[in-house]
Length: 252
Image (cartoon, rainbow, N blue to C red):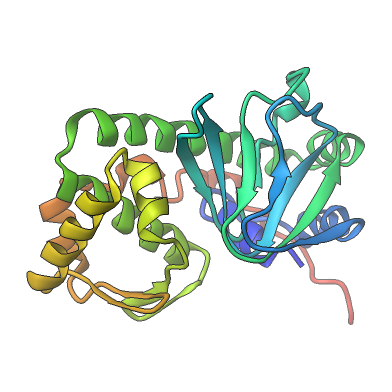
């Protein structure tokens, strides 16, 4: 069930029961499981469907000829991997798993059916794609202008808030299954530099890392240190005028 996607889309517009039912149907036709550190899609592949992350973490990345990798974005539960992918003749990047991943493959016909018959879903998907573009702009600023501590802190703030928006945090804690190498590949820092930054954040009481668990005791303090503003995530319910009023829940 794509409950995380539905919860995220409803940050923009309240979906009707019919809208949710259509999303549930589209996401249940073909579900696949991937092990950790496995490619879902490789650069050069011909796109045939949209992948919806149901459980687990994945990332979009590019690899240079000498093997160096740049992580371009992280995919969390509820994220669609390139819903506009059918415009492309071939993939210009790869998508790989970080943890075990369960995903739904949504066909081109299903996407077209959703967008033609459900206008609220269409508008919410446009919002989701615009937010994705905004996140990429912020990542460019992060790598180009912020100092090492600000880069890592900014990324941790973003991941925490994105997880919180789909109900995947507990108080001030969340799952953080990425490694220091992953953090370095996402922020353009060496493993040594990332380690030093994490020690500084811990030493200042801004984060607590225990295994795969991240705790942020004072999110506002970490945001200030990291020069973080959540405005680019657009979580302020701009589409409330699109609310699905009057829908009646079908009998169970």
